[in-house]
Amino acid sequence: MKTNIGMKTNAGTKTNAGMKRISMHGIAGAALLACALAGPALAQDKFPSKTIQIVIGYAPGAQDNIIRPFQEKLAEHFKQPVVFVYKPGAGGAVGASFVAKARPDGYTLFIASAGPVILNPLTKEGLDYKLGDLIPVARVASLPLALSVKSSSPFKSVKDVVDAARANPGRITFSTSGASSTPHLLMQLFERSAKVSLSHIPYNGTAPAVVALMGSHVDMAGAPLYGVDAFYKAGQVRILGVGDRVRGKDHPDVPTFTELGYPIVFAAWHGVFAPRGTPPEVIQTLANALKSVVDENKGYFEEKMKTLSVSLDMQNTEEFATSLRAETEAMRAVAQSDKAPAK
Image (cartoon, rainbow, N blue to C red; front, side, top):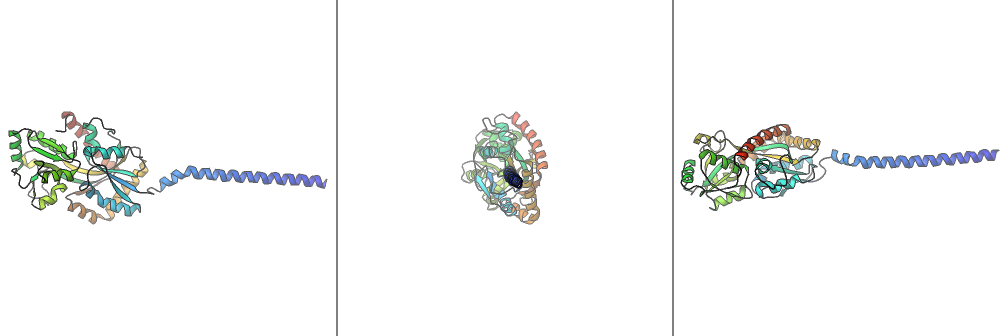
């Protein structure tokens, strides 16, 4: 009986031990499965955990200078590399398309103005991205747009340009950073207001457009003030008019279009965008970081922007989205009344 009892006891002991082993294996398996499932969530919580790339839709030498201070401070803030990737072409559409098709995880961003984000989708056929494919993160800067000529140009004023254009329709040329770019829209508004016809020569960025002016390949340039400011200060460029509400403190001799009789108040902005589908928490992390680095280094950013003739103009995600909606409707009206913006 003892043996039987012993046998039963041993069998029971073995059975319990086996059940414990099975249970431990089950717990370990469940734990591994839980870790595997939690992996993506944990990785997402640590955003960013790798290099962030900021896509520039134009040639080096202009737009990248505006965003460079943000690039440097964001890298310090996140303790991760933040790099530029240049994708120039088609008035910023090449860069916009690249970002629109990127994985929506916050690691590929786009620095842009209204041209590639709003105007291109409204005015260009055959694009492989559309309105809404790029969503706002934050606005960072605004800048006046200007009509400029070389100092050796026979055009001493906007009136000279208008008189010559009326006498020679379609003969006077101007460069911009690209068809359907923001400077191109400024020039369209000027043509409409002055009732003249000019000839548009688009380039892949502000820097090439200004180089074309300085090389006498075009008669005028429609460009952000920062693009021509160095030449202006060196006495090589004459700025005929600026699309701002008032004359700039650093350019008191440059008249606004409005005071010259052409009611054009049109400034450009630069903002950060991400692909549609980027998680809201990632957008918020990026927007908060941009605000934080500016708040902590306000003097640094203001000085950097001032040297570029650019204004620090921060808007959070919600504010930027609201202004984009209003601007989209305004530009839609212009696009519908002018089906062929490129000339």
